[in-house]
Length: 128
Image (cartoon, rainbow, N blue to C red; front, side):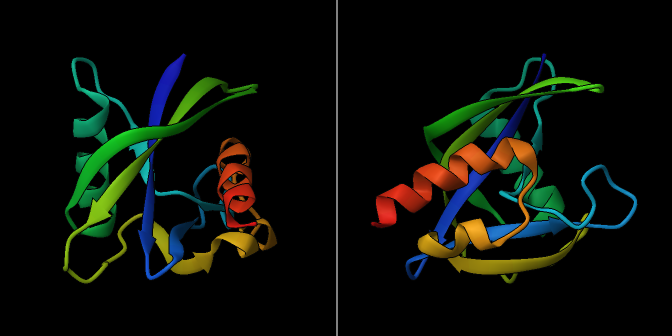
């Protein structure tokens, strides 16, 4: 099973989502940014590297917020969502085509990738 990290980045009461570009699996769907853990890499190092590569910003990985398992014909992934603090740089997308800062209560309005849905639900519940 592959382990994938996802950043839960909050700013001014909103959560960062990114949309997968055309040509990717789940293209057009929204997700918490992050990516696959490399052999020998800690979860925190993975998250910080992936955000730097995908968004051209630095984050400091924090505690694990939630986990979900998603199985498909391509195999199973374990998605580990971690709280992360964003630096002051401007986001520049490389593998996504859009990003949005979303109120917790509105996360369900976005067409999320399947593995991200349980994390969004947990965040939304905390908004009420």
